[in-house]
Amino acid sequence: MKKFILISISLLLFGGLFAQQTISGGLFAGPTMAWMSSDSKIVDTKGMKFGYNFGALIDFNLIDNFAISTGVQFNNLGGKIIYNYGMTNLEPKEGPAIDTLFPGTQMNYNLNYLGIPFSFKGKTNEIGYMTYFLKAGVTPLINIKTLGSFDNYENLLLKEINLFNIGWHIGGGLEYSLSGNTRILVELLYTGGLLDIDKTEVFNTPDMVNTNNPRIVLNDIHLKIGVLF
Image 1 (cartoon, one colour):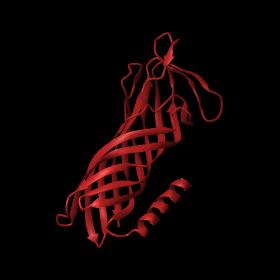
Image 2 (cartoon, rainbow, N blue to C red; image 1 turned 90 degrees about the vertical axis):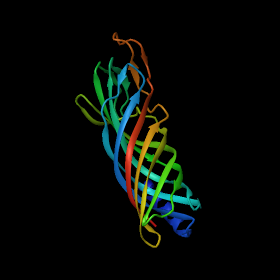
Image 3 (spheres, rainbow, N blue to C red; image 1 turned 180 degrees about the vertical axis):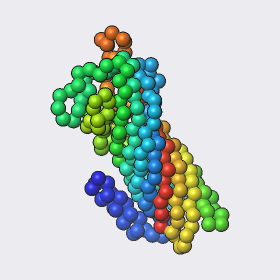
Image 4 (cartoon, rainbow, N blue to C red; image 1 turned 135 degrees about the vertical axis):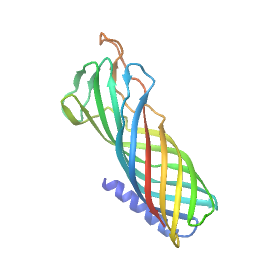
């Protein structure tokens, strides 16, 4: 968390050095709704996790109605997975591996990520006090904490989630001008996962003999409310 705060401050200071019209930045926070999905029949990805996101952003305004947007953000994400035939070799951060999770076990994942989104942003001229925009891009993510809850285990620190993930995102929002360069930001984005996020060994038959690693991706919808300057 200390590293995240230092990166956020650095981005804001960098933006402050170029406080002309060409570069703007700010801070944001908001709620997140995340879920996992898979095309495999040996797992069911049901249910959503409500979390939060916060961070700092910078817009590099190339021309009047077009910008490149980046920044750094903390994402609290997750979801629920039901292992239809069970799984094996679940690895906690501390202590021995859990040999077998039985068929029908539901794992509730609570995942923390550090993200560095990169977007192309198109925006209107100011209409009244409002500027509307659309954006699309990619978000590389680094997993910084994984907690899993199942059966009698609560918030077990796990190694099952891959360190690196990436998703594509699309969305839009508005900026409300207060005075000078100060604006209120409201933004809604959908992120679709591109990579398999885990390395779990899942049984693929009822006899619990053979295993494989089904592809599971992480998706989310998140709202950002912030102040730009």
